[in-house]
Image 1 (cartoon, rainbow, N blue to C red):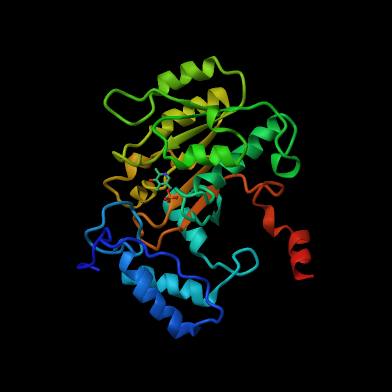
Image 2 (spheres, rainbow, N blue to C red):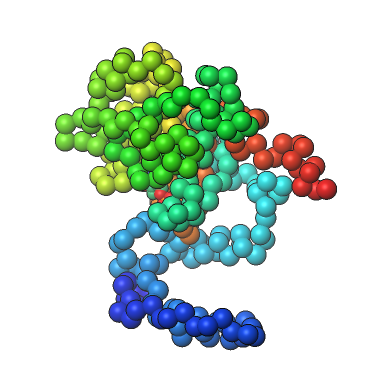
Length: 298
Ligand SMILES: *Cc1c(COP(=O)(O)O)cnc(C)c1O
């Protein structure tokens, strides 16, 4: 990995015609090594600085291979204590429940999790305010506004997938020289907004690693009653480091939050967890309802 090019010098080969007969595992591997491997990026290597892809440590690979070999369905299988540990360690003593949300190539057309999962729960909360469940009925109420300072690109993507709309996003002013939201400016915007809305806060912005003042935002929520989603994909694990834990002070106030495991935990790409204080039995992630499981078993 250390010697391989981060950007391949060769171009991607033309697709070969679909063969009439399969080449078998060894033949397929050989074709992969000859045709595909030379144009792959050495993203697991030490000189790759493009994205925080993760998955470069032996422990990460061990976890990934074990996951693939055991191939559990997270709805019906036992996922063990990992989620509870994660909730306790990264969210303090807050009572919340988590669900794994595979991020699946967020920058492509695939669903832009992990913020998607949290905002889907927020959408359910918005729907309740007008007496409908969007997960059950589709969304037939007026467009709420979602506010957010320097948001990650997955936030507008999630709003688009959920039918809330990219245009529902209000970009908030930040504090001078910072990427953190200016709580006073947010209060002024909320003063002029009569509708229920979602505020997306950051715990670790992607460019400069800035953190919003979550206590100040929680105080505003007391006054205005919005849904507080915290994008802590990057900054979650600051809570484990005593010298940095103050950065995520107030995190337990979040209504929903997402954590990327492929950032500081360096597990392979596509691993994230979403936590919410509202594991809504009729919400979008109610896949494990008894009737669904019974149906699946039938
Ligand atoms: C990485 C990141 C995300 C999610 O991106 P994925 O590539 O899907 O993990 C969301 N928000 C922030 C601030 C991030 O750093």
